[in-house]
Image (cartoon, rainbow, N blue to C red; front, top):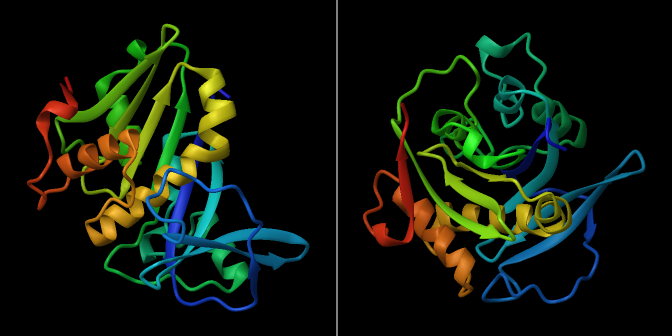
Length: 241
């Protein structure tokens, strides 16, 4: 797991067709109401794919990708193929073409993303590299932001850090805790936190009353250029050298 970058992706899409009800699950207390997102599935060639409808009538395509490098990670959330990437392999674009899913254009050519990186020791990952992960930057992208904003917890001596991207529709979770990464984050938190992030980014409302989501909402607000509501006492920042 340590050498992989796990990317959870959400794409606003046009209304799909041919979908089926999603599998029923226990009530998820992450959200303040049970109908913030309704999950459905698309089936194609014997495989199932996840789509959701939020309570404002917007559809999304959700998928999970594994990447081996920053450059692969960066390209993994392209939802349109610009001319300068005509020869590049764009996993998400190709997958949506295969499923006949049309992105809903809202002025951006990239999906919403939530990255997980499992590391041997969080303190060994520089602020510069944490920023690359949170912003989904490639290895040769220019550095614009000179610091990171994050919240951090520690469990049995192992740290987990949540880092917000700056106007990139993305954020990252970097952790030393393999149990959290494998048993808690990837099965549930990766997508739930992304759903919260998408809803907060699009509508300016955090659909949760739980403590951790509220901390995350404040963190995300702190890196939105037109949002002045963040409480600076509830997140940390670190300069990029």
